[in-house]
Image 1: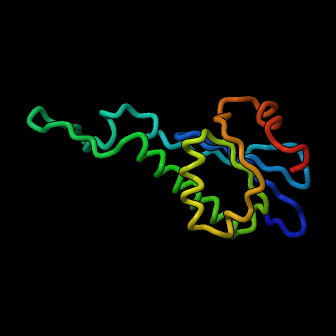
Image 2: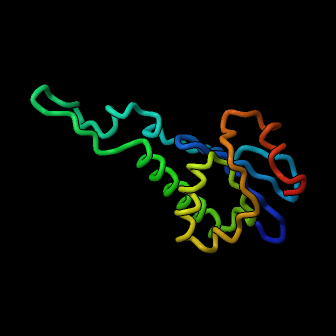
Amino acid sequence: MSVGTKTCAWVVVANGALAKVFQSVDGSPLELVEEHEHPQSRMCQRDLHIPPGGYTEAEPIHPTGTHEEEEILFAKQLVKHLDACHVKKKFNKLYLIAGPKLLGYLRQEMRHHTMLQKTISGEVHRDLTHQLLKEIREHLPPTL
């Protein structure tokens, strides 16, 4: 959907491993339009970056990634995707709902995407990814 003269708000509800993108056009009820998963953020530290076929007994286990690195990578991927969608005029207002840590990563990455950054109309510092749409809506302004 191209925005045109309509107000199209996207609401991103995310944690370090999951992002749900909801849309509201001219104040319509929110509807889910996208979901993005980053399962590496949920993996056990030991399982991050295991070579194909696993380690042999002769090889010590030296994971190269951490959960924090995976969450930063997910934030970068998400911002890059949101920027591409903004360039395609899929939305003109953006609301971010995420835990403080992920929200910080998203903000840090958005510094490189100033046009996307200008669309941010609000932020909520809470992880609501597992909440019902009704609870998510209660954390947003009455008019999107």
